[in-house]
Length: 435
Image 1 (cartoon, rainbow, N blue to C red):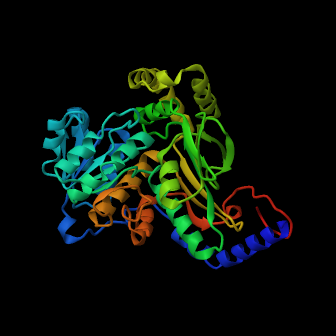
Image 2: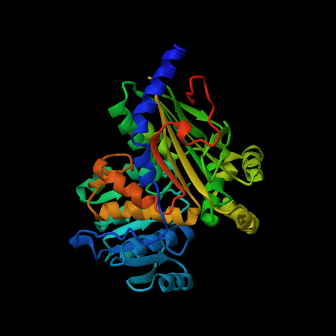
Image 3: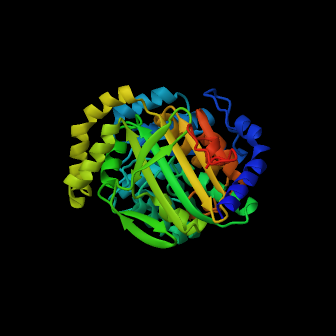
């Protein structure tokens, strides 16, 4: 049986070898402004409201949209006029600031009145009781994208599918970098496996690494703390299981520029959506950071603080204020590299992965959210509320273009290759076969 598995893997490698050169060529990206997007005439001069646009994630998204589509009118939505003016000054022409409170229906309605698309980047999404922005978008018939990274919020957003459909409004939830781009990578791995393999996809594993806070600010820190208060939902052979947060450590090889990193279980929405949409029986997601003592600290918090404490947004914000100066100081040393590895295993022994690595999370998160926004403006999203891996969310034929935009500036981007072609220290199992 072992010999059969080795032979199958060898055959898969031989089939894959013809496309290696093409993949290397496709995966080279630079930071030049070479990917200016020509939108359809009817949406070329669209107005896009970026909520949370004065923050790290929203600001990065606005910058990326302005870079990709200089003709777009970018509206920065936030509470701080001084920060808003600074952001508008950075973006230049075709940009403006509007003061908006996302918890106030009237304020949201006024902000959405004259825009074509809203990008909701005003997190954290954890422990948010309502989908106020999505509801307002449906009410005002405004296309919608969010960068949600919370399972409960994402499922609540999906419950508005019929209302969005009735309003003829396209909406994508979890449309950031992870989840978001990682979902599309998973969907493409599964599609390729079903086309090229006789086996069935049976195991999907998401692994994420970010140095420090990724330079993405206190919102990311708050998100991390709030996730520690949630039981981890994973799937094992079709059975839903619940696990302790920041447990189940694995040492994952993220390839060149990143290397091997420890990652830990977290409750992330792509686990549920990939299981339900892609039909994969076994799914999990893990995250790790650096320096190593941050991982120790995260693990200690799950043991020392009660879930009730970690679910309290007010108390978590107090923790963020306490830790933020230290985190920023360490960020200056650790940098903000980010990497995503998505592994797919099939019943016939075929193992493939997708890998994304970038030097700056603060840049790549903006490229990712902008890529989803552009897909909506180009008509790649049907009316309703969709996850990124659903073909109604991002049409299958539009996935490659989305990934090309989202991966601009990456130091490593590889899709549908066996692990040994990526790992920095692959293990050899006789006959020159790597496993």
